[in-house]
Length: 224
Image (cartoon, rainbow, N blue to C red; front, side):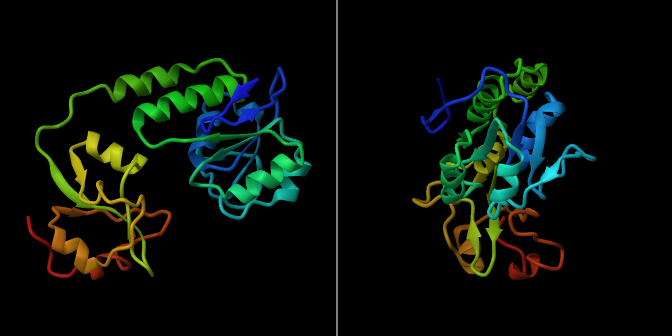
């Protein structure tokens, strides 16, 4: 018997030959390890380029009937990317669901190792060791303070205990909302500027910020 990152018991076959992934990063991890086992992924799973598998909707609105029709040995999910109601519906159909929990770089390495070797029954890939070595460096002494919006209407930013925040901290960028009690607090652009930041980082997902959609909310720069 195996247990996913949430401690949930997952019954898996001895050999896993059909995997459906509901998270882009997990899709890429499987595809880079053994693409032959991957039979389904979301429409947002665009890496590696040219991935030729069945598309099963999005992370928040998966096509459950299509997933069932693919008869997967296991469905890969993430605790904050996917809705628990969808995962429960798949479990109720007798489908094994493996849920990952990833909030830091070390946690990611451990989670991916377990997902690939336990959930997908694959050999540990060498690229995991390459990635681990790539992240083995001292924290930069020179630091920058940043806010990281992830949504607007309403504005939301990265808060505590997030993978994005941990990655940035290891690169020398400190999230000014890292001590907020919420993981993704709602704030206004004015509140962002008031806390004092060197950078406002605007990603292209989950909200697709662009040069014309986002920067205009922070006119005149900010304290440096």
